[in-house]
Length: 233
Image 1 (cartoon, one colour):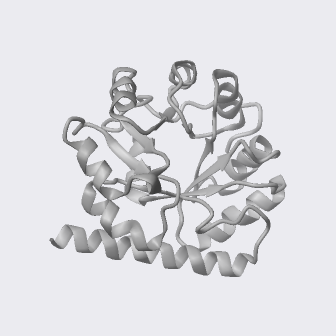
Image 2: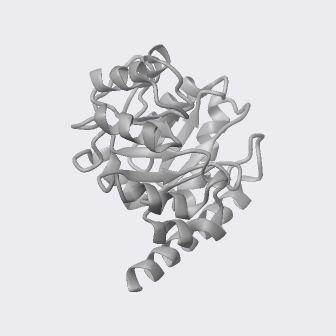
């Protein structure tokens, strides 16, 4: 269990998804549920419980939530055995340090920032920077990051991941931004290893938790079916 003042070392290698246990957990789960909005820490915990009940095992709490750090600590304390909890929308090194201190098991950023990568590296915590262009992918790889968030994915679609995978076969892409249940198979065929799902699953305002569990279970089932179809092809 992790308290709000504890710095944890989760990954054995920060960016390299080929050797990071946390990255392997994300790939195995295939789904990163994203919470944004004005939830309190207790509401974040309730959302986490509802998602776990629906089969979700990886959760990103974005720093756009005013209670994100408190919520990350509470989620780690209460759901550590069932849920991997990370921080999202991490824009600089100071924020990364605060997230690790709160117990975040991984760091996700919407951009590629050298200082943020370095801060996560100091604590051996998986960092998943956001990229959009081949130039950014190349920079991320040189910084040691091989699990990357393609954002906003909806602006380019699955074919873009397939195109990037040609020159960067070592990269594990997580499409995020406008991705929903109907997109999973096409992205999986293009090589996506996991998906960041935000508003299509978790609302920015408190929602009916039973319906959230049902929606999570449906999305997990959709992902399983998509992966099965890709594997059978």
